[in-house]
Picture: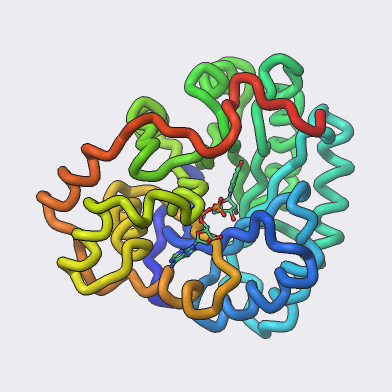
Length: 277
Ligand code: NAD
């Protein structure tokens, strides 16, 4: 495929751009993922709590693409944190996906007040050592949570998937991750398609390159070194979002986008979010 790969800290390769399926109902996930695979995506980001692992798995199976050419990520939902419950939940995810391993398994939220992410991660290490996840990582972790894992667990997470877009640039987390050889994966990379794609700076940069605002924003992520997983169920946008490997933003563009950071979260605050627990 046309998407370049980044190498995780355990040597496994991940496509730098993948397809996210949050808020896609199970029956719509099948055609959406099929369209993405036809367009050249090979990495799919789902989660138990999205309720679409079955629909996603059906599209993977029907695609005829060799398993080793796919990169499938799923996530442990909050209610299943804990050592034994994680092992059971992982089996159930694999079963729904119709797979015998995933490429990447993530803890969806740290829920520090619940205080089960270390035990949960120890179950992840077991799943990893059994070869049923080729890599393990986390999502929505703050540096303090990663620090605790570094002290109490053995395997360094390969990446941390966090909310990240030009209006929430996460400089502190990105620097921390880079120091620990953890990749940064950006969720809601397009700012959920809300205000960000109409911001005049974004529109002007897109126009300058003869591209769409979504494509300009995706280029910004790629040039920063982020792994990125834009979502759409619209076939033309699914194709548009992967068509970003034949142009580059210049230093002026990057400087103008850097100025858009306003610490604007669209999603929950990881220090307090415990939904489903
Ligand atoms: P996103 O930033 O990818 O935006 C998606 C929305 O933007 C679409 O629904 C559509 O309205 C619009 N859009 C998409 N392509 C467009 C285009 N080319 N032009 C114009 N508008 C376009 O938002 P997201 O879905 O929140 O995030 C992407 C993925 O990240 C999710 O699907 C999911 O896989 C993951 N995610 C993870 C977490 C987490 O807690 N780990 C949270 C949210 C999302």
